[in-house]
Image (cartoon, rainbow, N blue to C red):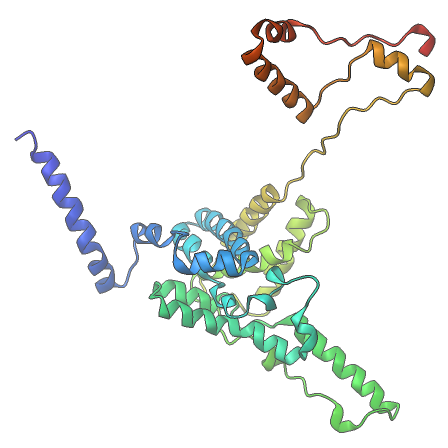
Length: 339
Protein backbone atom coordinates (compact mmCIF):
# COMPACT_ATOMS: atom_id res chain seq x y z
CA UNK A 1 0.00 0.00 0.00
CA UNK A 2 2.93 2.35 0.66
CA UNK A 3 4.13 2.08 -2.92
CA UNK A 4 0.67 2.49 -4.45
CA UNK A 5 0.83 6.32 -4.85
CA UNK A 6 4.24 5.98 -6.49
CA UNK A 7 2.94 3.30 -8.85
CA UNK A 8 -0.09 5.42 -9.76
CA UNK A 9 2.17 8.39 -10.48
CA UNK A 10 4.43 6.33 -12.77
CA UNK A 11 1.50 4.81 -14.67
CA UNK A 12 -0.16 8.22 -15.05
CA UNK A 13 3.05 9.78 -16.36
CA UNK A 14 3.52 6.99 -18.90
CA UNK A 15 -0.10 7.22 -20.02
CA UNK A 16 0.02 11.01 -20.44
CA UNK A 17 3.37 10.86 -22.25
CA UNK A 18 2.12 8.19 -24.62
CA UNK A 19 -1.36 9.59 -25.27
CA UNK A 20 -0.46 13.30 -25.44
CA UNK A 21 0.87 13.25 -29.04
CA UNK A 22 -2.20 11.28 -30.15
CA UNK A 23 -4.60 13.69 -28.44
CA UNK A 24 -2.79 16.70 -29.93
CA UNK A 25 -3.01 15.17 -33.39
CA UNK A 26 -6.69 14.33 -33.06
CA UNK A 27 -7.75 17.75 -31.76
CA UNK A 28 -5.20 19.77 -33.77
CA UNK A 29 -3.64 21.53 -30.76
CA UNK A 30 -0.11 21.80 -29.41
CA UNK A 31 0.36 21.91 -25.64
CA UNK A 32 3.10 23.75 -23.78
CA UNK A 33 4.75 20.41 -23.08
CA UNK A 34 5.23 19.83 -26.80
CA UNK A 35 6.43 23.40 -27.37
CA UNK A 36 9.07 22.90 -24.68
CA UNK A 37 10.26 19.77 -26.47
CA UNK A 38 10.33 21.57 -29.83
CA UNK A 39 12.36 24.42 -28.33
CA UNK A 40 15.52 22.30 -28.17
CA UNK A 41 18.35 24.26 -29.81
CA UNK A 42 20.08 20.97 -30.61
CA UNK A 43 17.56 20.35 -33.38
CA UNK A 44 19.44 19.53 -36.62
CA UNK A 45 18.12 22.65 -38.36
CA UNK A 46 19.17 24.91 -35.49
CA UNK A 47 22.61 23.32 -35.39
CA UNK A 48 22.97 23.89 -39.14
CA UNK A 49 21.83 27.48 -38.69
CA UNK A 50 24.42 28.13 -35.98
CA UNK A 51 27.24 26.81 -38.17
CA UNK A 52 26.25 27.80 -41.71
CA UNK A 53 24.43 31.08 -40.95
CA UNK A 54 25.59 32.30 -37.52
CA UNK A 55 24.24 35.82 -38.09
CA UNK A 56 20.77 34.47 -38.82
CA UNK A 57 21.02 32.15 -35.81
CA UNK A 58 21.75 35.06 -33.48
CA UNK A 59 19.00 37.14 -35.11
CA UNK A 60 16.52 34.30 -34.51
CA UNK A 61 17.45 34.07 -30.82
CA UNK A 62 16.89 37.80 -30.32
CA UNK A 63 13.57 37.65 -32.21
CA UNK A 64 12.58 34.75 -29.93
CA UNK A 65 13.32 36.83 -26.81
CA UNK A 66 11.40 39.82 -28.15
CA UNK A 67 8.43 37.70 -29.20
CA UNK A 68 8.23 35.67 -26.00
CA UNK A 69 8.24 38.75 -23.77
CA UNK A 70 5.62 40.52 -25.91
CA UNK A 71 3.36 37.46 -26.01
CA UNK A 72 3.35 37.28 -22.23
CA UNK A 73 2.21 40.91 -22.06
CA UNK A 74 -0.96 40.24 -24.10
CA UNK A 75 -1.74 36.69 -22.95
CA UNK A 76 -0.67 34.96 -26.18
CA UNK A 77 1.31 31.71 -26.25
CA UNK A 78 4.83 32.70 -25.22
CA UNK A 79 6.22 29.19 -25.78
CA UNK A 80 4.80 29.07 -29.31
CA UNK A 81 6.32 32.46 -30.10
CA UNK A 82 9.73 31.44 -28.83
CA UNK A 83 9.87 28.15 -30.75
CA UNK A 84 8.41 29.53 -34.00
CA UNK A 85 10.87 32.44 -33.88
CA UNK A 86 13.75 29.96 -33.66
CA UNK A 87 12.74 28.43 -37.00
CA UNK A 88 11.22 31.40 -38.84
CA UNK A 89 14.33 32.08 -40.98
CA UNK A 90 15.59 28.54 -41.65
CA UNK A 91 15.03 29.16 -45.37
CA UNK A 92 18.16 31.31 -45.36
CA UNK A 93 20.18 28.09 -45.12
CA UNK A 94 19.81 27.73 -48.89
CA UNK A 95 21.85 30.88 -49.65
CA UNK A 96 23.09 32.32 -46.32
CA UNK A 97 25.75 34.52 -47.91
CA UNK A 98 23.08 36.64 -49.66
CA UNK A 99 21.70 37.93 -46.34
CA UNK A 100 23.43 40.86 -44.71
CA UNK A 101 23.78 39.29 -41.25
CA UNK A 102 25.90 36.49 -42.75
CA UNK A 103 27.57 38.48 -45.51
CA UNK A 104 31.31 38.90 -45.88
CA UNK A 105 31.89 42.69 -45.79
CA UNK A 106 34.55 42.39 -48.50
CA UNK A 107 32.32 40.49 -50.96
CA UNK A 108 28.69 41.49 -51.57
CA UNK A 109 27.11 38.95 -53.94
CA UNK A 110 24.28 41.37 -54.77
CA UNK A 111 26.72 43.60 -56.64
CA UNK A 112 26.64 41.07 -59.50
CA UNK A 113 22.82 40.88 -59.60
CA UNK A 114 20.06 43.16 -60.79
CA UNK A 115 17.69 44.50 -58.11
CA UNK A 116 14.97 42.16 -59.39
CA UNK A 117 17.20 39.07 -59.11
CA UNK A 118 18.40 40.12 -55.66
CA UNK A 119 14.79 40.53 -54.51
CA UNK A 120 13.89 37.09 -55.87
CA UNK A 121 16.78 35.50 -53.95
CA UNK A 122 15.77 37.23 -50.71
CA UNK A 123 12.06 36.51 -51.11
CA UNK A 124 12.76 32.83 -51.91
CA UNK A 125 13.89 32.16 -48.33
CA UNK A 126 10.21 31.92 -47.32
CA UNK A 127 9.48 29.07 -49.75
CA UNK A 128 12.82 27.40 -48.95
CA UNK A 129 11.99 27.58 -45.25
CA UNK A 130 8.61 25.94 -45.75
CA UNK A 131 10.23 23.14 -47.77
CA UNK A 132 12.82 22.51 -45.04
CA UNK A 133 10.15 22.57 -42.32
CA UNK A 134 8.00 20.01 -44.15
CA UNK A 135 11.03 17.82 -44.81
CA UNK A 136 11.87 17.78 -41.09
CA UNK A 137 8.22 17.28 -40.01
CA UNK A 138 8.03 20.50 -38.02
CA UNK A 139 4.84 21.58 -36.29
CA UNK A 140 2.16 23.07 -38.57
CA UNK A 141 2.19 26.32 -36.58
CA UNK A 142 5.91 26.73 -37.27
CA UNK A 143 5.24 26.34 -40.99
CA UNK A 144 2.47 28.95 -40.76
CA UNK A 145 4.84 31.44 -39.13
CA UNK A 146 7.53 30.82 -41.77
CA UNK A 147 4.98 31.60 -44.49
CA UNK A 148 3.48 34.61 -42.74
CA UNK A 149 6.37 36.39 -41.01
CA UNK A 150 6.90 38.73 -44.00
CA UNK A 151 3.27 38.74 -45.10
CA UNK A 152 3.08 40.23 -48.58
CA UNK A 153 5.29 43.16 -47.64
CA UNK A 154 7.62 44.92 -50.05
CA UNK A 155 11.35 44.22 -50.33
CA UNK A 156 11.78 47.96 -50.14
CA UNK A 157 15.58 48.26 -50.53
CA UNK A 158 15.73 46.47 -53.87
CA UNK A 159 12.48 48.06 -55.09
CA UNK A 160 13.94 51.50 -54.40
CA UNK A 161 17.16 50.48 -56.14
CA UNK A 162 15.21 49.33 -59.21
CA UNK A 163 13.32 52.63 -59.35
CA UNK A 164 16.59 54.57 -59.16
CA UNK A 165 18.05 52.55 -62.02
CA UNK A 166 14.93 53.13 -64.08
CA UNK A 167 15.12 56.88 -63.45
CA UNK A 168 18.78 56.92 -64.50
CA UNK A 169 18.04 55.13 -67.80
CA UNK A 170 15.15 57.51 -68.50
CA UNK A 171 17.51 60.43 -67.95
CA UNK A 172 19.95 58.93 -70.47
CA UNK A 173 17.11 58.47 -72.97
CA UNK A 174 16.28 62.16 -72.74
CA UNK A 175 19.92 62.92 -73.50
CA UNK A 176 19.82 60.52 -76.46
CA UNK A 177 22.41 58.31 -74.78
CA UNK A 178 20.08 55.32 -74.47
CA UNK A 179 17.08 53.83 -76.24
CA UNK A 180 13.50 53.60 -75.03
CA UNK A 181 13.77 49.80 -75.09
CA UNK A 182 16.54 49.99 -72.49
CA UNK A 183 14.20 51.38 -69.82
CA UNK A 184 13.50 48.52 -67.35
CA UNK A 185 9.95 47.72 -66.30
CA UNK A 186 9.54 47.90 -62.52
CA UNK A 187 6.47 46.27 -61.02
CA UNK A 188 5.81 46.53 -57.28
CA UNK A 189 4.29 43.05 -57.24
CA UNK A 190 7.63 41.55 -58.35
CA UNK A 191 9.23 42.88 -55.17
CA UNK A 192 6.56 41.67 -52.74
CA UNK A 193 6.67 38.53 -50.62
CA UNK A 194 4.07 35.90 -51.53
CA UNK A 195 2.26 36.00 -48.17
CA UNK A 196 -0.14 35.29 -46.65
CA UNK A 197 -0.32 38.07 -44.08
CA UNK A 198 -0.16 37.08 -40.38
CA UNK A 199 -3.32 35.17 -39.50
CA UNK A 200 -2.98 34.91 -35.70
CA UNK A 201 -1.50 36.91 -32.83
CA UNK A 202 1.70 34.91 -32.40
CA UNK A 203 2.51 35.17 -36.10
CA UNK A 204 1.95 38.94 -36.06
CA UNK A 205 4.15 39.36 -32.99
CA UNK A 206 7.01 37.45 -34.65
CA UNK A 207 6.55 39.45 -37.86
CA UNK A 208 6.90 42.72 -35.95
CA UNK A 209 9.77 41.43 -33.79
CA UNK A 210 11.63 40.33 -36.93
CA UNK A 211 11.39 43.81 -38.45
CA UNK A 212 12.20 45.58 -35.17
CA UNK A 213 15.30 43.49 -34.48
CA UNK A 214 16.64 44.04 -38.00
CA UNK A 215 16.05 47.80 -37.85
CA UNK A 216 17.65 48.07 -34.40
CA UNK A 217 21.00 47.10 -35.96
CA UNK A 218 21.00 50.37 -37.92
CA UNK A 219 20.55 52.64 -34.90
CA UNK A 220 23.43 54.96 -34.10
CA UNK A 221 23.96 55.31 -30.34
CA UNK A 222 20.64 53.67 -29.38
CA UNK A 223 18.71 55.11 -26.46
CA UNK A 224 15.16 54.85 -25.17
CA UNK A 225 13.83 57.68 -27.35
CA UNK A 226 15.38 56.40 -30.59
CA UNK A 227 14.29 52.82 -29.93
CA UNK A 228 10.69 53.84 -29.21
CA UNK A 229 10.58 56.04 -32.32
CA UNK A 230 11.92 53.22 -34.49
CA UNK A 231 9.36 50.73 -33.12
CA UNK A 232 6.47 53.17 -33.62
CA UNK A 233 7.55 53.83 -37.21
CA UNK A 234 7.76 50.11 -38.04
CA UNK A 235 4.39 49.25 -36.51
CA UNK A 236 2.74 52.24 -38.18
CA UNK A 237 4.21 51.30 -41.57
CA UNK A 238 3.03 47.69 -41.22
CA UNK A 239 -0.45 48.85 -40.29
CA UNK A 240 -0.66 51.26 -43.23
CA UNK A 241 0.51 48.50 -45.58
CA UNK A 242 -2.30 46.27 -44.29
CA UNK A 243 0.02 43.61 -42.86
CA UNK A 244 -1.95 43.39 -39.58
CA UNK A 245 -5.44 43.43 -41.10
CA UNK A 246 -6.00 39.67 -40.93
CA UNK A 247 -4.92 38.95 -37.34
CA UNK A 248 -6.98 39.76 -34.25
CA UNK A 249 -4.58 42.13 -32.50
CA UNK A 250 -6.23 45.13 -30.89
CA UNK A 251 -4.82 48.65 -30.61
CA UNK A 252 -4.40 48.17 -26.86
CA UNK A 253 -2.47 44.93 -27.41
CA UNK A 254 -0.25 46.63 -30.01
CA UNK A 255 0.59 49.32 -27.46
CA UNK A 256 1.66 46.67 -24.94
CA UNK A 257 3.67 44.84 -27.61
CA UNK A 258 5.52 48.04 -28.55
CA UNK A 259 6.29 48.79 -24.90
CA UNK A 260 7.60 45.25 -24.42
CA UNK A 261 9.81 45.51 -27.52
CA UNK A 262 11.25 48.81 -26.30
CA UNK A 263 12.01 47.45 -22.84
CA UNK A 264 13.64 44.27 -24.15
CA UNK A 265 15.71 46.05 -26.81
CA UNK A 266 16.88 48.71 -24.38
CA UNK A 267 18.11 46.05 -21.98
CA UNK A 268 19.90 44.21 -24.80
CA UNK A 269 21.53 47.30 -26.30
CA UNK A 270 22.69 48.92 -23.06
CA UNK A 271 26.06 50.63 -22.92
CA UNK A 272 29.14 49.63 -20.99
CA UNK A 273 31.41 51.71 -18.79
CA UNK A 274 34.78 52.16 -20.44
CA UNK A 275 37.49 50.93 -18.08
CA UNK A 276 40.91 52.56 -18.31
CA UNK A 277 44.10 52.18 -16.32
CA UNK A 278 44.87 54.98 -13.87
CA UNK A 279 47.83 56.87 -15.34
CA UNK A 280 49.34 59.82 -13.50
CA UNK A 281 51.01 62.46 -15.60
CA UNK A 282 53.75 64.32 -13.82
CA UNK A 283 56.51 66.69 -14.86
CA UNK A 284 59.55 64.84 -16.20
CA UNK A 285 61.80 66.36 -13.50
CA UNK A 286 59.83 64.57 -10.78
CA UNK A 287 59.43 61.16 -12.48
CA UNK A 288 62.48 59.60 -10.83
CA UNK A 289 61.48 60.85 -7.37
CA UNK A 290 57.89 59.62 -7.75
CA UNK A 291 59.09 56.21 -8.97
CA UNK A 292 61.00 55.79 -5.70
CA UNK A 293 58.33 57.06 -3.32
CA UNK A 294 55.02 55.88 -4.80
CA UNK A 295 53.82 52.54 -6.09
CA UNK A 296 51.27 52.61 -8.95
CA UNK A 297 47.67 51.87 -8.05
CA UNK A 298 46.67 48.46 -9.39
CA UNK A 299 43.51 48.45 -11.47
CA UNK A 300 41.56 45.59 -13.03
CA UNK A 301 43.83 42.90 -14.51
CA UNK A 302 46.95 44.23 -12.71
CA UNK A 303 45.34 43.71 -9.31
CA UNK A 304 44.24 40.21 -10.29
CA UNK A 305 47.75 39.40 -11.48
CA UNK A 306 49.26 40.67 -8.20
CA UNK A 307 46.86 38.51 -6.18
CA UNK A 308 47.76 35.50 -8.31
CA UNK A 309 51.47 36.07 -7.61
CA UNK A 310 50.80 36.17 -3.85
CA UNK A 311 48.88 32.87 -4.05
CA UNK A 312 51.67 31.31 -6.11
CA UNK A 313 54.30 32.52 -3.63
CA UNK A 314 52.39 30.99 -0.72
CA UNK A 315 53.26 27.51 -1.97
CA UNK A 316 57.00 28.16 -2.09
CA UNK A 317 57.48 30.70 0.74
CA UNK A 318 54.46 30.99 3.09
CA UNK A 319 56.11 33.52 5.37
CA UNK A 320 56.92 35.91 2.54
CA UNK A 321 53.43 35.59 1.11
CA UNK A 322 51.87 36.42 4.48
CA UNK A 323 54.06 39.50 4.78
CA UNK A 324 53.08 40.59 1.26
CA UNK A 325 49.39 40.33 2.11
CA UNK A 326 49.72 42.30 5.35
CA UNK A 327 51.98 44.99 3.88
CA UNK A 328 49.93 48.17 3.22
CA UNK A 329 50.11 49.83 -0.17
CA UNK A 330 52.00 53.11 -0.08
CA UNK A 331 50.28 56.13 -1.55
CA UNK A 332 52.55 58.98 -0.45
CA UNK A 333 51.73 62.49 -1.49
CA UNK A 334 54.16 64.28 -3.77
CA UNK A 335 56.65 66.65 -2.06
CA UNK A 336 55.54 70.20 -1.33
CA UNK A 337 57.73 71.50 -4.12
CA UNK A 338 55.48 69.67 -6.62
CA UNK A 339 52.65 72.02 -5.82
